[in-house]
Length: 504
Image (cartoon, rainbow, N blue to C red):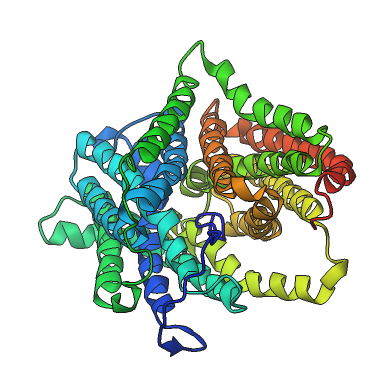
């Protein structure tokens, strides 16, 4: 997920009017945040590209030796936790720290997490994951809030500023797997380690360390060039009891996290159904209400369900699709070694190329462009089509490694689906939410991403079942399921548009 769900645009409640020097028509501190976020995303996606591969690596090769199923469930819980912790992370900044301090502290915690994973032991690996979760929860929502704080609410440059900021996300996400994948898996680097007295089996930890270096570079940029940010996201006034809201939010998040964790335990997997059936019930309940404002909440949960389903397949990029790249896709292209984590760079590269084209398309279509519910539906159809592409690829894999073009076609279709769905989601959430519930609805958007990431791990846990002859079934079942969901969405688009009360 590279654009733009990881960093939702905040809703300003008060004008923020600091004076900033201008650069390329925007406040100069925007570019400080651009590079800080670029390196933070470098650290996150660099580590993510290695995570499942390292967990499933045999212990004899210095990996954790976990099964595909267990590694996928851990991966899903980890990525879910990153998004869920953004909810209390935003509240901590609003009530106690301010956005600027939250970003700085969060970045330091993230760097410590990556460097912990650079130490070759199972304990330091999981401590590192926990630290990255906690740090990202502080950093991610608040660095976006700082971008918003550079513009007054009516500033026409605001959307363009966020577009520049999101480009930094994707540049970091593109570069990261190339660097960490080279360090972790490339034969040249492993040979270099051996020649200099290091254990080549520990090359993975060099990749984790590189992610930490990326985060440190982001912190250096943030501190060294952050003079213009002193007035943006300052610490708030702290009346007595200011700590209560963050604590309650954190405890509530832990309860939801506990239910998700429990759903992986034998005898409790039925709890997983609640994460989907609950939002569907709320969609119907609110959608049948009499007043317009409440009916709009029914539409909100329509988008919640769509985002949930989309991320459940899309976010398998770091789990099942990563395993397919490693085990069944060519690792030499045109005579050059091509480490499997490098395929993780395809999505952000496609975003960088296609995002301006999609923006131009919607602008040219103007009032003729598809409605928000229809864009969501198109995104789901493209996602299902992407997994359909993998069915013949899986069948060809029974005879040996397949062409990289199969995975590239999948990522191209997924990216087109992402650009139909992700930029629309948050904007529509905020437009449909009652004014007093906008903050809560941003939390709901994070939950959709969190639950989708969790279910990506659940679905990917069946990747290793049986043998390669059954991989086509793995992809076909999910593709058919999403085609059915997309068909249902298409049928209810008129109903949802009616619930939206004139919001397009």
